[in-house]
Image (cartoon, rainbow, N blue to C red; front, side, top):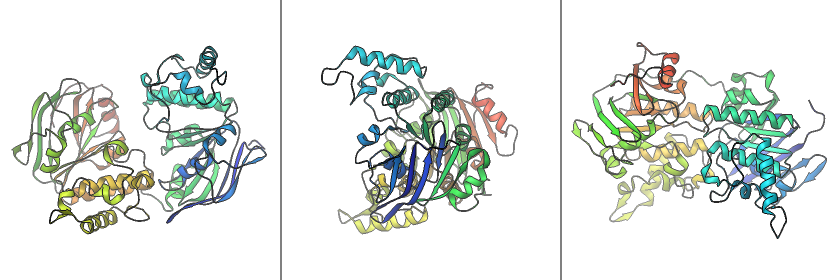
Length: 503
């Protein structure tokens, strides 16, 4: 282990009204090493990142870069000290070029910008990380993976000693993830210290040399990655052993609730047909771009099919808009909870009752007492962790935000619940809670559609699985029946079996 750390946190504490986010946290980052920062949502990881990048000033503790104590009062101070962050969602300007994004705030030439020099330096930075786009390209024309490369180039333009990667692979394909790992290896070889935050254990074990675990704002362990196993990290994260076997409940599946025949959209999916029954969990699995989410959005009235027929409880059903689906008893928890599923500046109560406001109108006025009672009941049932029910949703962890989104749709008292990637971006403890609750939904008599790109999740929870590839259903398998194996399902999802089916 290198003798001199690049950065050291010591005794860092931070409190907000009603919440102690960090308590006496300390660890070091070393040159040429990747340190994985792990913990459940709400463990304090984001607060650490915001402290390191000058967004938050700690209440107590010290931050040392090299041998020099630092006090960051703004992100500019962190940049000047050689600390850069690459976030899950890029914070750049779509209408500006790659060169302009990289050198915003420190353009060559000062007041009189030297554009030729900016493009020359940008080209050198892009070549350094083997990026295959030009300095003149507008950011909006790049993929998410390429935008991450621009952020890495921007960090290198500041000669960053410490690079923070906060869930950088969440929106990337498998190929793009491998390309990111290649760049991480290159940055390590150049001597950069990297703080890598991820919920995915395969990534942690692939890229990291060291690990630091937070739980409830406190550091509960650290060490070398080669000396630890995944179950040990899980136990540290949640404070108890977590059963990795999904909590599948033995239920008697009831009558058909939803029937879909020949549902098609000219550009997204074709000839989708299936039935969904009460107390059933029907899984939809496929790779990115398979068309799973597009089918669900069509059922919810977010888009219109070019042909096909939908029957709900034996009656023809057409959703011209989401309001039609909600009124008919269909709820849709979208994959993108922050943009489609929730209003982050609003409070927990306001988000929880957003889709069911009519149920809380008394004598022509919205009853806050009725809203509070419903929020308290659903929030308690889902074990939402918050200071109070009026707290802004954006202040909660990702796992708790997801619970509030689910609560919002449960408040509409649906017959069919569509869950699109319900555990995306949340930690192992919150995943276990959501998995258990999905089983409760089915046990309560609801018909559930589970869309997931995590094969263990969909195999662990579903009674049947429909596999999609390039907009078509390629196979449907029943729990315990022929084809119910990870190998067969993955083969179908990758296009090994192109025979369309009905389920």
